[in-house]
Length: 394
Image 1: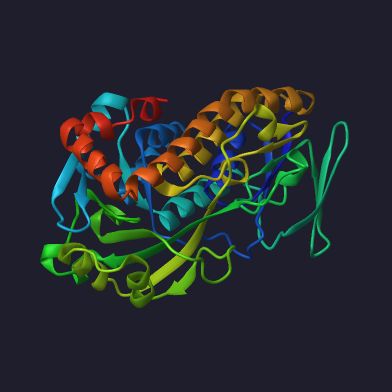
Image 2 (image 1 turned 30 degrees about the vertical axis):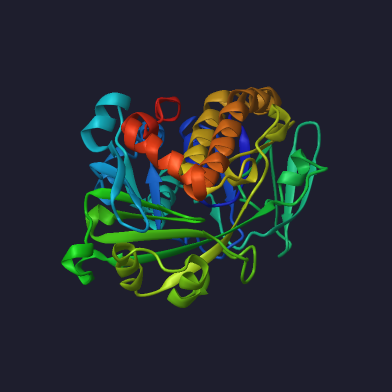
């Protein structure tokens, strides 16, 4: 008999796991606290390690239709705009890793996954307005209740409910709160056609590095829109759990100071800004941080990470595929063993990505001699330093 699996969280990781498990024949119920299944945010970079897995889920065609496929990643000085290093993407990534490097709008990726889950499961297993307040486990069952007096039971529970996960405390009972990093991120999205010609970028990922800040811009929606992200060391503002806070160019300038003319022109061309405060957790230390009995964690619920390696969504999708592979076509009695196998297979890679993302934050925002050494190394080694075979081939 297929397993009955409850998935807490209807974001990218939760939906990817629901799709991967349903393709294995398991029965899925997705419980999302928001009333509707929608996503906020803007762009997401998807390395070959991620696009390869989305293709394996049968999503290659709709993914290619919505994505932009940049040809190059260029690292620049935030002050002078001069190129420091370049990494070929496009056909180079396809040939080297067997899958493309793509940039998508987060809402488009989310909608694609929602549609795929609904198409796969005719019973419509997506439950909105389901804010979990109670979790109980037995030898062969997991029960959850929500704040509106609904209840579900299953053979397993997957915690894909993000940084402030409710399910996490069932796996890591003596956990500490997420760590405030002291960094704030701003994002903006603009139609490419509304930008001056000099600011349009339909085929590149541009990264600007400056003292205590960095910025990223890349096309999404097939090149029809440009996504811009700026991260700076700044005191948090607003609700720490709200990653869609209204902000302004003035607030961004106060945090970053004056950048070079080219980057400043791009920032000033954005119609509006949203902001969120960056939190993370220490890298995983064991498989026990990801699963216990009939409960498993994935994505930010298990290993939240800083965006300095552009792999948050990627690791959640990798988790989803690994979890489905571990359970295979097993039934209810196989869940604890399968979840243990999943956690053993995933925790070290996730910990490495967490640690590398933290390290990249220090490197991106370096000042003084460290900054000079960073730029010299990038100019000398170029693509060899920027490429990540251990990550993209995984």
